[in-house]
Length: 228
Image (cartoon, rainbow, N blue to C red):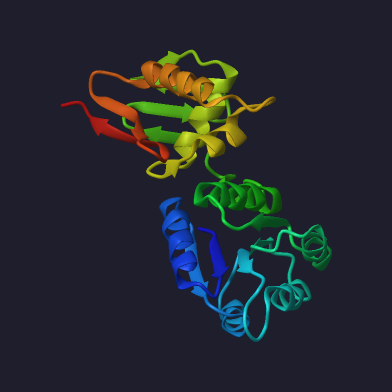
């Protein structure tokens, strides 16, 4: 499980991001200034740093420089400073991304996921060759899905979507996350994603379980729920 250090002098921002990140299965350590963040960095195994820039004492730039001198973990800046020179400075220091305030927390979660994949790949899931959910079994070596022991034919897009859902069972996945994991070319509109999910849901559902559930205002979650 990835552990993320979230640093901001506004407690509400730290807690908001904690809620959204933990909802996706990440562990979050919060800090409210640079010195506190540096202490947390030294005391814990941190996989990513998400930090504000303008803070009393040690600012985000200094924190990033200190961390970057010791590690190549992804560093994402959150800042209200919109000037291009600030963004260039952050990237030159070694930041992997720069997110402007005010932000949509779902966009932040998507960027966090993208940068974690870019840095660590899928190594933590490399041993998962077979995924089970209810009456479904996905053999990722052969790229085959079985429902109640019978093979189910999937398109390439449906297969990529299903594998992403199964890798993240029980987690709420946003439309942007599903797009990043499954679409190979252009960004689809919301309706295209909804149609694709609906078609996959119809292929998976059986007399015992429903699998892909809509979480209103957030996205989708996969888990086997018995039909009532």
